[in-house]
Image (cartoon, rainbow, N blue to C red):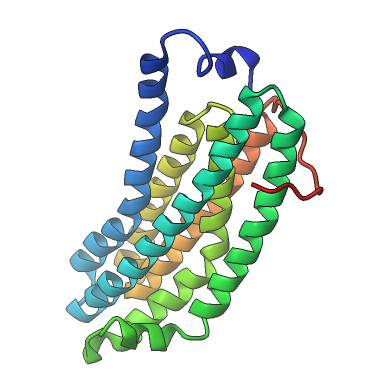
Length: 232
């Protein structure tokens, strides 16, 4: 990121800077929450009630998981912003490296808990008997995409830490568009129901990570990532 853009959050009209920074963050959070809503609407139009019920139950779980991961990655944003503001970009780099390691372990743990126990989670959520298999399939497939949810949010946290809240908004908007297109192809076109909606969601999240990695590779970051552990 350019030095000029970083300084906008450190000097000048602070209220105006915060508003321009916060609005894309709020909109990105809203779009992330729309994944499940888009799945539900399209499955409701092109599949039966049991498939729709499976998506409704499964998306509640993954909206919660996404919000928890998003909230935790805010710590990376705060740490990076604090270290850059203090003129210590090398510490910001070490913090990012530590954050990547921590969230990689978290993603693996969530995947290990969700995927093998998807049917147990469906039972815990009191999925209707008629929609039990659809709920379990949706949860299992989305569980396999936990790594993409986590990766997107960690990269987005780094962007926000250096003062760029627009790029994460762009990547999640791209993902939402791809998710809707995938739903139309897999659910409406191939009749795959809840499983198709879950595949579309995971695919969209994976593509958003690819775009995020591309955009961050094009940034002139004020620090280099480091394997040295730093306490966040």
